Image (tube, rainbow, N blue to C red; front, side, top):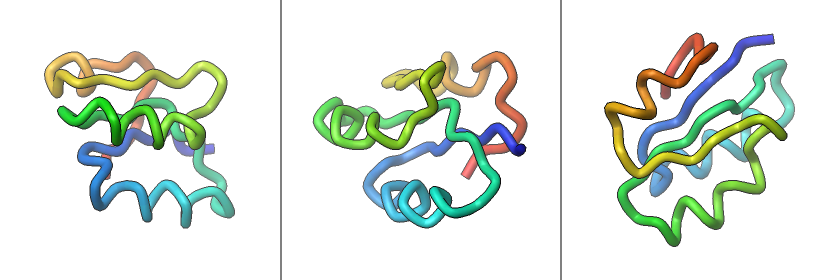
Length: 67
């Protein structure tokens, strides 16, 4: 299973919805808008994390790809 992160939840929101049916684990999301992050957290895996800082997001341990 691919461990994925999504940067920018304004358009990334749709990726998160579509990827629910794929063999992908959403392990990290990142957006500077905290209200979008709160809404998108329902798509995160149990061990997933939400970030407002891109530098911290991109260093997320175990993340294999980013959209």
